[in-house]
Length: 119
Image (cartoon, rainbow, N blue to C red):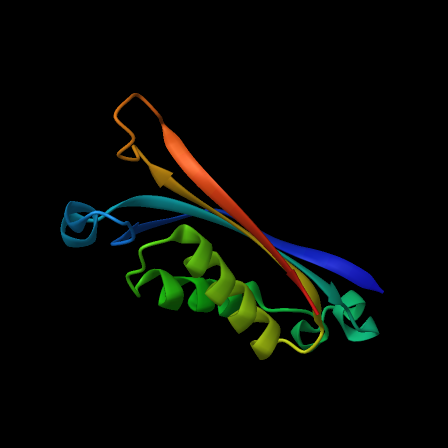
């Protein structure tokens, strides 16, 4: 049976951005992750081995957010690839990454990018 595991509103202080000041001072980011997966029957009998452990998904996101990149597209892609590599039962991964107060020359609460990667 297929199911979806979601982590919403993960917050990080990270150093992603095109401009040098973004890469030196950093910014607040929010990440949402949705993993569609084939769940085994054991998940429905209260056994963690039958599903995707969201603690492991968080560790993947945290590890990738700690690596500075110029573009959020790259960060989202590397997170999606890492999730699919780690979890063979994952069918697809959707990542949304938002940067708060982006340097666009005007008022903007956050700018975001969404990446969908499937097997």
